[in-house]
Image 1: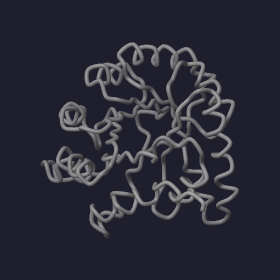
Image 2: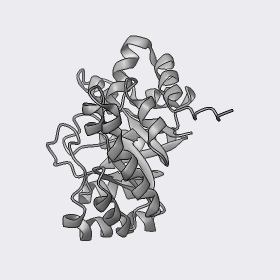
Image 3: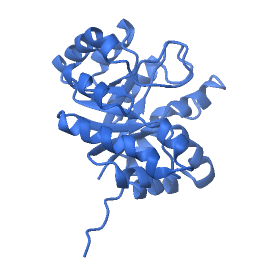
Length: 243
């Protein structure tokens, strides 16, 4: 079964709006794990507008599944990851003031920096994933950095899903096959939701993990957290074998 990692940044955004500790991001992460998620994702940004570095430190002993830290590999970010030692780190090309991730890495242009960063994390025993567009050439270059996985940027799929879902998913099927052929694991994330996740999971092979935050937290406001997580897990259920 493809793993579901819940990005809890939006919970921290809500907390920060009042300057107190409600909702409690550590408690929320623990509740998600109790409800059957396979991992917790955080993306601490330099301005700490949602997840704070102190949250990352506090979450480390609380998370019992897989802890995934996303971020741009600045010196400060690298130091934080090496201190916390999550199971996985996902390298994203976001500028410090980016509202959200909007593209994968230009791997070729950043090859030396990415390779050096991956080496640091691999030496520390941390699985490393590189955020990429669904481009086989970028994926082949990502493999050369020594990374363990790629995370496919799925906003183009989500944007095109309603008009032509077959065309929308086709490039991701090709990208996932390319990654598998290079010996890379495959993660995916950005704008995946209850509307489009099941089809993506059904069609994209070799999918190890999806990371979902905004849509899942939003759905929980309407459905409640237990029902929401159950619905997302149902989208990731393996297909029944043909009779």
